[in-house]
Image 1 (cartoon, helix red, strand yellow):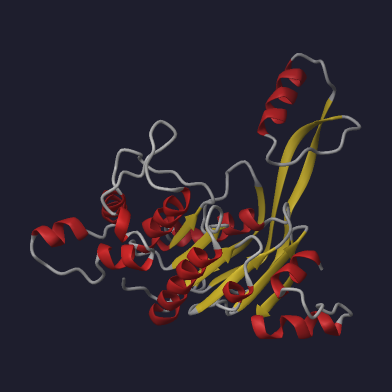
Image 2: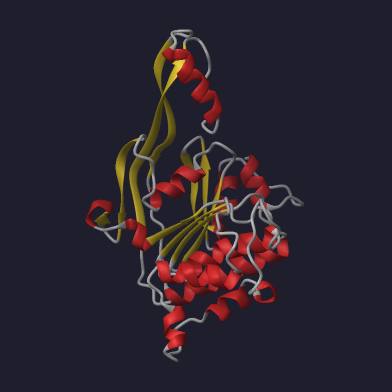
Length: 299
C-alpha cells in the first residue's frame, strides 16, 4: 500500500431528512423503512393527512480529521454516527438536504472522485458466498486497481501480499474456505467480519471510515484488527475514523483521538488523553471503576 496523507475537514456541515408525517404524530425512527412505506400508501389513498417534516441528523459539524491519527467515533444510537461516516466518504444519499461542505486537503468533493480516495466499511457484511476468502480478497484488490493475481502470475512480488493481510486478520486457516451465505454454511460470523475489513485493507484508499466493524467479533479479534489498522495508519500516513460499540479499555487505548456525537452535534473532538480533563472541567467526572468509553456513551 502506498498512501498519501489525507486530511478531511467538515465545515459547518449539516444534514437533514424530509418525510411525510401524519399530523400530530411524532417522527418514527429513521431506520423504520417498513413504517415509511405504509405511511406512503396511506397518504396516497388519502387515509392519513400528511405534512412535510424536516428531521435534523447532523447540525453544524466542523473539525479536521488529521492524517496519521486513529479517531474513535462514539455516540448513542441515533446521534448521527453513520451519517457522518457516509458524509466524510462521499456516500450520502441524494434525497438528504445538505449544507456546508467537506474538503480533502483543501479540495471540495466536486473536484475529485471521493470514492477513489475514501472507503466506507458498513456494519453489514456483503459477500459472494461461493467465493473463498482468498478469492474474495483478490477480487476486491483487482476491483480497486491492485493486481495481486496478475503480479503473482508474472512472478512479480507485490508491495503487500494477500497472505500478509490474511495473517494479520487471522484468516490463514480459512483462506481456501468459501465465505458462505444464508443458503449454505461457510466461515463463521467473526471471520466474515474480518473479510469485510480485509476487502478495504487490500485496496489503495487513503481515508478509511468504518461503521461498527466490531459487530459479531470478540474483544481479542477486535483488538487485533484495530491494532493492525493503527500500525498501517501511522506508518503510511493514512486517515481513519472508526465507530465502535462499547469498546473494551485496551481497544479504546489504541486510538489517538476521540470524536463524541450527541443529537447530531459534536460534544468533544480531540486527543484521547485530554477527554477526561475536558469533561471534569465542566462538572462530569468518570467513576474510578468505569471504562472511559462507557462513561462517554452515557455522559
